[in-house]
Length: 312
Image 1 (cartoon, one colour):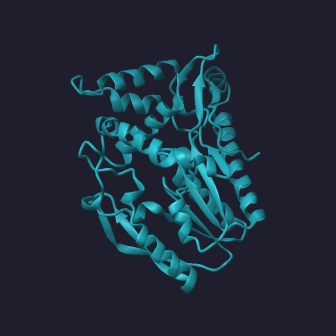
Image 2 (cartoon, helix red, strand yellow):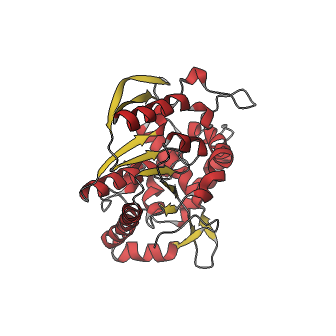
């Protein structure tokens, strides 16, 4: 059953997950991934029934937005629908034009870092001319790329806009009056002990996802991830959380096997963390949380699992 966002965190029993991992690891992985894919199918049922072809998919860092939006496109296509996915990250302004936090550092979290004028222009062309060129952004150099992505549109095309600011009202003005479905994606489960004690809070598991992904996919070590994490969370409080109650649907991307799967990766990422680094106590606390979880590898992780976004 589809849900709207609720403040109360869901709970996953670490003991129960450990039991199933011991008895039938393949079955647990398959069941968790099947459960998530069923959520995607329900979302597709909803938007097809409501005939809302504009999908605004938002969520905090490392919540699984990218894979969720790709799965929606795949599911719609398999049902014979036309679907386009548009990453709002492509509309970032050059790094040199980004605004600043009060401490003088660049603010990568605010919607003011996006070129909304360019986005509105592209959407006007798409709706009026039924085609447009979407820019690309090269994050390695912090500037717009030379290539563009050709978009085609017809009234029965599902357009899925994915990004941390997708639910911000400033995007609605560009939708030409089309009805929209808002989707909020987040990791919304704490892992708890038998007595209810929280072993790993959802936010710390999301940080773990980010550390692993940054290290493997972006060549950025854990100290860099810790250094920017406070700003990421501040940006979420200021720019994302105010709009999550407006979402029609909330998707929780937690998978029950995650802490067990991540234990080896996070240990590797943090084992040589500099002792004199200001975030060394945070790294030590995060490592200690994983002591409650046995290690399992990715043998049973499917190729199209959402967790592949963070586990390579």
